Length: 312
Image (tube, rainbow, N blue to C red):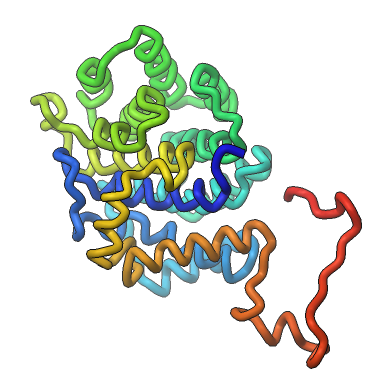
């Protein structure tokens, strides 16, 4: 395995956070859209506490914090909110699709949001299982979407054509940033990711770049949406080791809130706990009574026959 699961999980969350926080000149905004991924944090906490997907618990957590989605940012927040599902069920495409569609029922039934969510999650699942081939990613993603009335498959095919022609960033921006639509945001994120597959830094800088008039016509939210999705894709593929150390150090030094958490360090700890639950590893120190009940003096021992433990 090229990178460990914990590296890719951390890379996905941190990548999305950084991608949505960067300015056009590569500086991190400490107070920019801090709630962009708040729903993702709540979903992650639910999966950690219950060990499974429970829609009622997701809804209750959102209602408890009185999270309201404004009309202008609902689409991107929903896609970021489903990142925990993409990670938790990444090994099984069938369960991944089923659970994503279940979660999406919490919010509006928008076909474009559905296809955008499925496309991003599927790409992340291929990255985590080390099956992502840049030459076949877009055809595979379109196949995963299935028949759909949206323009996302056509936009993704256009991305593949641009990449095949070696088109630069300015041409891609002229193609996809002329209209602020979610389908264009998804397409631009895939372009930035695939055109700089091994370089996280360059991928997110491309996604947030606004160096010409056509890009400046787009809103800051559109740029942050593209950056967040690009960061999640590149973070999942390159792992946390691919994210510039100076960006990570800066976040740790600031110790500023991240997506509603008290600090960036808390996000890393939450991700580690998430990986532990996903992998089936339990921390005895966190749940001593549950795991040691009935064996007061004896050490807890767990046995399994060979090849009994399998993927979900």
